[in-house]
Image 1: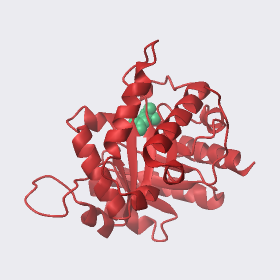
Image 2: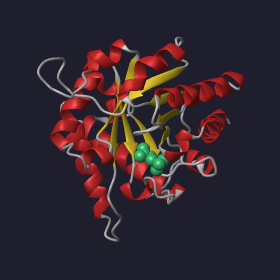
Image 3: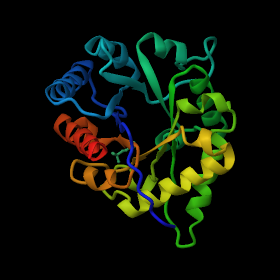
Image 4: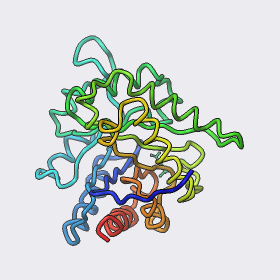
Length: 262
Ligand code: PGA
């Protein structure tokens, strides 16, 4: 597959804090560090923090102008009702959340299914929020079966999104073997999978609607590989471990911005 490199207009960099940090005080401190650094040197990139649920409304107060956007790491597709333990999209919107990560592999391993991912993706897009749909293989095989796996996850996730709402969908390619392992996918792997995902989207949705969907990469993105990975033409990153250190995260944001600006 050829690796045609297309520059992205405004990269989207999402900090996926996962179940960290352990107190609201530490969460606010980390957020303020990132905010201050980005105020000193404004990035081209759009920056979003996906924080644990209890911290979101506190963080909203720290970013009233939404210069840093807020994301939830999951949500429930129903609007309200008898769903103990769940959090709805209107609740998230009411505390300033604009973006929802959907079907992260860590959620899938805790019970998310293609059906629940599809229902939530449709609900988030319908609500006009940004749906960040995670796809990615467990491991790579030499016959390329992982492409089929990613294609199935992708088509299942988008099955109920109306065409007019596709602009609210972002796909994050997150190979499970690269998450939290320090072994990121190579720039070649990322560029190839990006093209593959774009082809699947274009074949299933039509070229123009598919063109509205941005493709991000996640999996051991660090300050020292962000420049190389940005050069693949990817539209941004989902950053786990490195997003918990403000300096590293801000460096990643600037690397992605610098590449898009060149
Ligand atoms: P990582 O996590 O950057 O720690 O590999 C990425 C993710 O899970 O989104």
